[in-house]
Image (cartoon, rainbow, N blue to C red; front, side):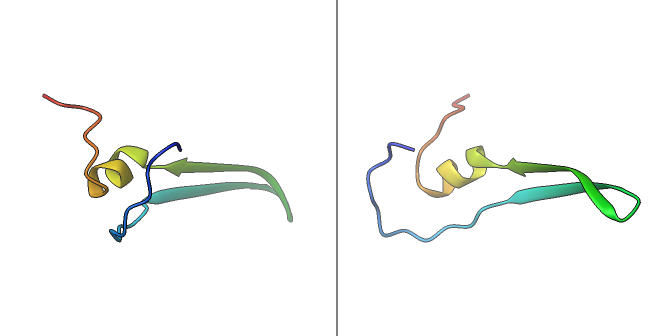
Length: 48
């Protein structure tokens, strides 16, 4: 992501959605909350 390395732990919030057709996986969507991750790293993207 082009960020400098820091020794601060944080978490990733992720939503993983699957759609099946019968016994087969038809689609998979993964949504990653990068705004939350960056905020935990001390980077404010959306400043009000």
